[in-house]
Image (cartoon, rainbow, N blue to C red; front, side):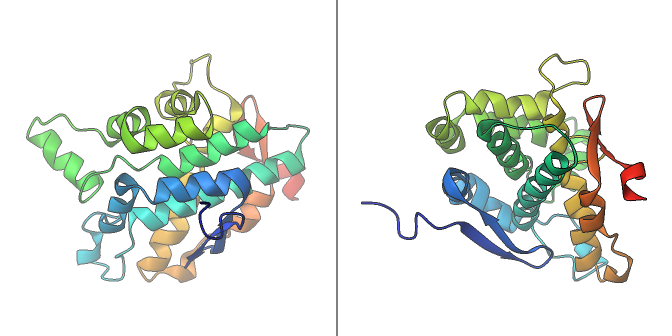
Length: 225
């Protein structure tokens, strides 16, 4: 028996981006990943650790941020392909969006705050290493492999890539770089939830002028003038 509404896009209502939608096979995979216990636990992990003790509105979760990053990745990919002769296969596109969705799935309670405390106690814990573990083992790995053979390994490359790694492609920088979907989501989300939304940067406009140079995502200043 098929899932109810399985042919429809998966739509989430987000306070920053409005309607966040993922269609087709990508949407089905997003839904399956979001429904896993590993991803659902992000609902209970605050994006900014204990910042809410100062900015009491900053109660937003890694769950909301992760969906926002995945959606931002879709917009970045679309803009870059509009502004250039670069193209992606459906597999490459979906790999990028799913890597963006899962980039924080390994975070523990209190996010980076916990990692700093554990480091002082000489306890070895790294959220990226845990993210990679989730991608290689258990529910998430099974869903990734079911959606596309080899996808689990490909998504690990997004997390583990190094600048001199021959596996690196320009779309990897959508997930991890100085101008990635992660940053473009949290600079809006964190400011809004902390109550300083009057200082939010115009990220949608910035995305419209994205391009690629030397294998990296850039803002095309000439095009924006």
